[in-house]
Image 1 (cartoon, helix red, strand yellow):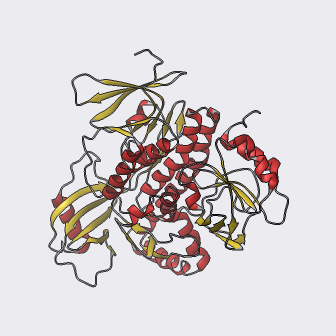
Image 2 (cartoon, rainbow, N blue to C red):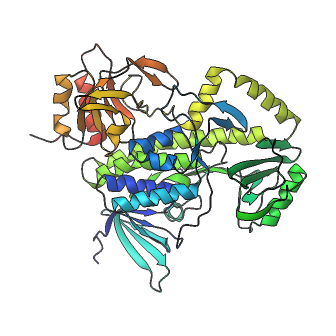
Length: 505
C-alpha cells in the first residue's frame, strides 16, 4: 500500500457508546468508517446507568429512541449530589432520566452501527500514529502475530480515560487529582430493609443501593481522604468491607456480577483536535460520575463532531469547521468538571458539609434554582456561540408539533437523515431562494407550527419563529422572528459558515 493510499475515511478507536454513536453519525452521512476496539468482545459490564433528556432527544432526532425506551425505565426524579431534583415536562418531550445500563446501550448502538454498515475490528489496539498532510497512519496491535496498519483521513480517539490516542498525540490532560475512593458493584442484597433510602451519609463517607432488577442492586460506597492505586485489583471482599465500614453491615451481600472502582479525579484534554486526530468522550474528559453526566456528554460529543467531520471528509466544508468542535464542546466539558467537583465537595462527610447540604437543599425548592441545576445536568440549556441574537440561536431546537401539506410531524422527525434543515414556518419566498445554493446539503421544509409559543429552557416561552436553520445535531444556526422580513443575508452567512460555500450556478 502506498503512503497516501486511504483504507477508510475515518478510524475510530473505541467501541463504547461514544465511538459507536460517532460511527453511526458518520455512516448516516455517507462516510466510510472503521471502529477498532482492543477488547475481543463486549464485556457485558453494566457500568453507566442512565440517559438524560438531551441524549434522549438526540436519539429521537435519529429515529432510534424507541429501542432504548424499550430496554430501560423512565424515572421521574434525579439528583445533585444526592439532593433531589424535580424535572419539568415543559422543557422537553422527554423530561425524565432513562434508567438503562451501559451494556444495553452499547448493544443497541452496535446493532444500529451494523444496520448502517459500520465495520468493527475487535482485539485491535492502537499502538502508533503518524500524521501527514494527506491522512493519518494508525498502527494496530492485534491478536494475530503481525501488527496491522490502517490508513485514514482522520482518527478519532474514543478510547476512554486512559486514551492511547490522546497519549500518542501528545495532548495534555490537565486537571485535579483524586481525593477519595468509591467502590461499585452489582450484587444481591437479601437483608436490605424495604424502607431503605437510596443514599445514606455516614461518618466516614456514604453508601447507596439502586435496584436495577428484582433481587439485585447496584451498591456504591464512597470513602474520603484515601486514594487507591488505580492499578490495584478490585475485589468483592473490598466492596463488602467498605460497606461494613460506612453502613455497619453488608446486608448479606453475595453473588457479585461486576465490581469496579472510581474516584473524583477531574481532567480534560487541553485540545480536542490536533491536526487529523480528534478526541471525544472519556478520552477528552474524566470526572466524578455525579449526576450521571459522563456517558451523556460523550454521546453528545459524537453528535456534535459527526456531521462536521463528515462535511469535511466529503469536501462540502472547509477543514476549519472542525475547530468549532473544540470551541463548542470544550466549554461543555469544563462545566461538567466544575459541577461534579462541586458535587464531590457536597458529598464529603462532616458537620460543616452537613450544614452546607442543608442550606443548599433549602435553596433547591426555588424553581429558578432547581431549573438551573436541572438544565445543567440534562444539557438542555447548552447554548453554542453562533452569530445572531435570536433567543433560539445556538440552542437545541424544541421538538415542536408541525403541520405539513401531507400531514403532521415533529421537528425531531425532520432530522432522522442527519441532514441540516431549513424550516420555513411562514411560507417565505425569500427564505426558499436563499437556500438554493445549498440544496445539495440542506433540506428545505415548509410547515406551520401547531403552537404559537415554543418552550426554551433557561428562557421560558418564546413566540414560534418564522423560520430557522437547524444543524444536524439539533442546534439552531439561525432563526427569524414572526412578523419581520427574514434576514436572508444572515441566513446565507449561517449557511456558508456551517455548511460550506454555495454551489455556483
